[in-house]
Image 1 (cartoon, rainbow, N blue to C red):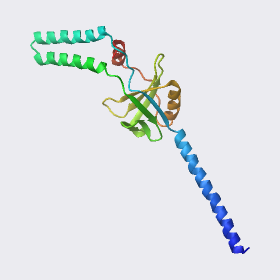
Image 2: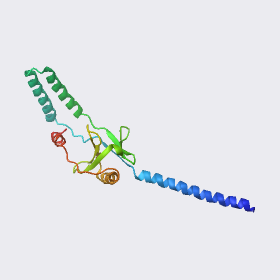
Image 3: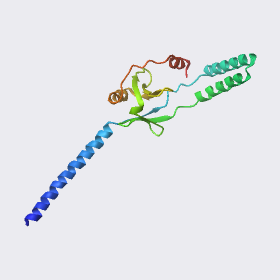
Image 4: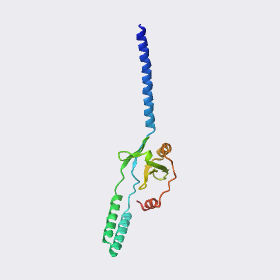
Length: 187
């Protein structure tokens, strides 16, 4: 065999090995990306069926407030209270949508709706719940409506916590009084 052909074959074999090393490196990178992505589905919020007494109490409060508004001569505020009561009851009957949530190297995402890159997030907390899904609470770097609450399974919550600790700090979340009151009232 000609020595030039032999060198060429050896060179091709060497470059083939290099190509396979590059391919395996790309595969490892893809695996790493897949491993660093957490994807789950959950309802937008905890739904609780409202009883007839709850609906009547909302309408009763709205009507009592509107009667007082009419007595004091504030006709438009009275109409507003009646409309607001009807809207609250109507919205309470709607079931939550099932959303797909994702945590990746780019940030946190409600797939197809909201993307939050890590540089726009300030801190996070994982709240453990006994009789429902845990909550991942994210605080954005904005002043108006800074908190995003995402339902998450407890096992995934631990994985998400570990992944988020690499990107943003964890803090202990103190639930605002209005959230506790709204949960107590069944909203």
